[in-house]
Picture 1 (cartoon, one colour):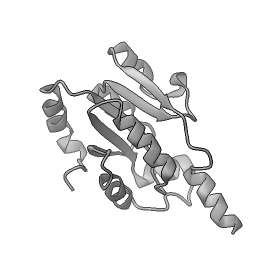
Picture 2: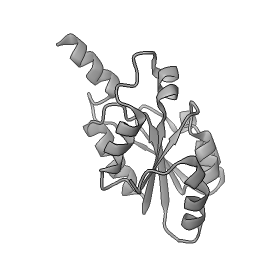
Picture 3: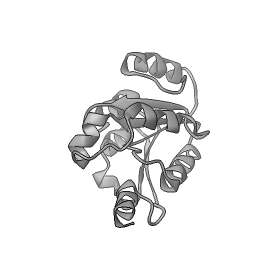
Length: 156
């Protein structure tokens, strides 16, 4: 899919974006079980600019962060689902535990995370602010998280 790019293609994307005056928004996450909370966040993130870039944790980083039973879906499956969304412009997988390298490389105009974060706990927030950008926290939809859905399934 054209929306999914790898690290080798990142410099080409950065170069293309630098030649436009379009506002670039960046968010990231595992997106392990795509749900309405994710969709709401991505639609609201896209509304803050012109180009939405999503950093997606690879399978190994999710296992390190969430435990041995995760991810539920493979990286390729998660990126394919995100690429099908109208709000998504580009998807970049990353293997580090945080997207700090991507954020400092891309210099997005807006950095977005969900309401379970505060600006002082968002990785890369200070870099974006220092570069003249904005950091936005989007309120989460209640009862929509991958962990909540997994627990709900276990109880049924």
